[in-house]
Structures are given as C-alpha cells and as structure tokens.
Amino acid sequence: MQDQAHAAGHRQRLRERFLRSGIEGFADYEVVELLLTLAIPRGDVKPPAKALIARFGNLRGILDAPVEKLRSVRGIGTVTPVALRIIKAAATLYLRQGSEGRDALTDPSRLEDFWRMRLGELRIEVFEVAYLDSAYRLLPDDHEGHEAVERLEEGTIDRAAVYPRRVIETALGRGAAAIVLAHNHPNGEVTPSRHDKILTRAIVLGAETVQLRVVDHLVVSAEQVFSFRRTPPVTVSPGILPHFPELDDAQRAAVGHLDGPLLVVAGPGSGKTHCIVLRALNLLLLKEAQPKEIVLCTFTQKAAFEMRDRLAAAARAVRYEGDLSDLTISTIHGYCHRVLTRYRHRTGLGHDYETLDELTQLLFIFEHFDEIIGPPTDDLYVTRWRTRWTAIEGARGYFDKINSKRMITTVLIGPSSVLSGRARERVS
Image (cartoon, rainbow, N blue to C red; front, side):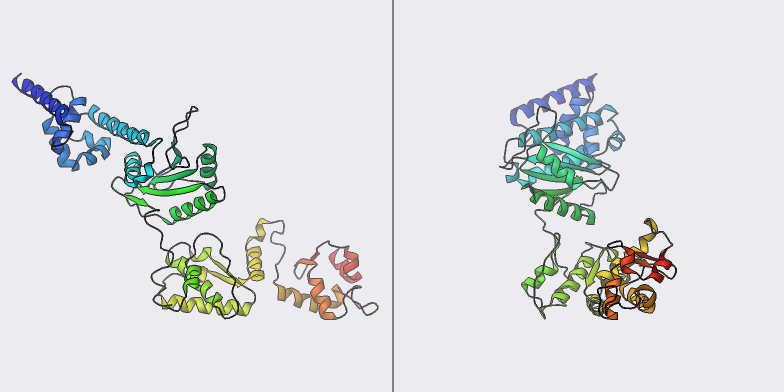
C-alpha cells in the first residue's frame, strides 16, 4: 500500500510539474514516465520508463519501435505499446493539420519530420503524395473524403508499383498546383534506387507538360531522409571528366543529360560521336541504364564499327568493368532486322519465313533477276526502270520477306504489274 501511495504521489508531482513549466527540464525517462501514466493506471512507471530508454535510446526510438519489441520490455504489457502508437499517430496528424493553409515548405525539416514519423517504421514500401496550392500550402481535406496527403500505392518490402500518369491525374483532379512525393525504404537505406530516379524523372517530365510543379521527392526511413531537392543528382560520373578534360561546357551538358530526349545540332568535327559514346558510358557508370537497355544507331555499318571501337577504348580508359557485349551498336536497318529476326515467332510469319537484311535481299534479286524482273520491254524493266541495278533496287521495295522457298510481295500495285510470268507462277 505504501509503494502504491508513493507511486501515485510521484505521478501527481510529474503532472503538476509539467503544468507549471512544460516539458523543458524533464529528463528523457521522465517524459516517458508521463506518457506511461496515460496507459498504465496504477503502479510505479519509472522502472519500465528507464528500461525503454535503455533499450531504444530516446523518446523518438521508443515511438518508432515496433509493437512486438515494445511488448518484450518488462512491465510494459500488451496495451501500452498500442497507446504509444496512438500517441505517435496523433502527433503526425497534428503536424499535418498544422501545415494545412500554411507555407510548410519554408521549413523543409518540418516536412521531412512529418514523413519520417508517418512512414519511417512501415514494413512495406508505400508511396504518398502531398497536394499543394499555388502558394505551396498544403490543401485541406475535401468534403468527399480525399486527404491532402494521399497514399497512392502500397507494395512489398522493397517495391511499390507507381504509375506517373496516375500521380499527375490525381493531382490535377484535386486542383493542386504543386505536389511533394514521398516513399519509404523499409530496409533503412534511403539512398535512391535506380528505379526511384527513373520514376522521379518521369513524374517531373510529365508534370511539366501540364504546369504542375514537383517540389520534392523524399525517401525516408525511421532514422534518415533523402531529399531530391536538397541533393541534386550527379549528372556526369566523376570517372569521366579526369580522363576527358577536353570536353567544353556544351559537350559536358550533352554527356550529362539524363532527362529525356536530347537533340544535338552540330557540324562535322564538332565531337558529336565522342559525346554520344561518353553519354552512353556515363549512363552505365551512374547505373542509370544497363548495357542491354542502350541502342546506338549509325547511318552506315562502317560508322557502327568505329563507334564500337571508340566505346571500348573509352570504357578501358575509365576502367568500366561491365559487359558491353549486351549493348547494341548498329545501323537502324540492322537493328530492325535484329528485332524482327528475334521476335518473328510472335507474328503471323512464324518460323516459315527467313528475314533478310538489305544487302542479302539485293543479292537474292540479282541472282534471280530473270525470274523476278524478266527481260525489258521498250528498254524498260517492268515499264519503269532503265537499268538492271535500278530495277533491282526498285523491286526490293516490294518484297517483305524472301527465302529460298517463298517470295511474298507487298501489294502496293497488282503482282501482275511487277513480276514476270515465271515469277508469278513461282509465287502461286
């Protein structure tokens, strides 16, 4: 009885002290004691308060701790951890409502603390958006139940499927002039993944087309916050510049361009090919792309061979250790032929047809010229071409697929107007 009376008196003295001077001057364990008195109606709460501090370090660590770990502390029981979660959730709601109608972005740390408290301890990855007005103030919740901070996606332990179009459409539907993006990393590491960078870039580019501003994208854990706004991405790998100091400002900008398509207009000898090679290498070094995701197209096969040699030499200079054999360097026609050959089984062609590149098509027509074109009439082949070579080049345009057994023509004009009688018999 005496112990209970002492405990009750201690509780009362803590409350009166708080009412007189607030939380200032309280030791960390005394603040925890105050909270525990709300959840534990009787008994001495000083020992469990000190045990919580010893286990989790401070009040923040206690409020961020999982319920199961809190319950393992002696004297806490099963109800108190739930009460502590309610207290944290109420504090988060207070921060959010305190930002409605105010310029919350004048204090970025306030915004970061809000999302760290809201998402930092979640065990699955979630993606949320805050909707702002033109003065960058948090919009109030509307009458249809839509919140100013909305959770758009929930995923697994390491991935939430987010679609840029949905983010932008939802923001426009809310009448937002600006948005802040946030998601958590349950593993505690807030360094943006390659997927995070690609997603952020896609949303920013899409938002710009409808005059919607993306103020920031935050990646949070229980202990840390990464801000895309405060930490601009490195656009040129540190491994490139020391080895290629001759790059001028315009060339560096081209090499480091990461946001969507880039049009470069420059004359002969201006270093266009050099910049294209270094841009591809830069994407690899920054892990913005994998070799199999890069296609470099040239006008001629000779230029493709030269570009491959340049890329290999640049990769050796910066000691890039990836496998460049998966990177495609080809003419546009060669790349289309490669794709068509690889995926023809998914088309109506199936495996009965053989795809031929441009040179092989010309050679095939040359070898079967008499069967396909036939003799001239009034010095013209098929009433339009004056020489055998122009006839071969012209006829090639009417052939989609050719192999040793079949010839299929594009019906731009009637087959009888293009092929000789013997070739028509062979097609039929």
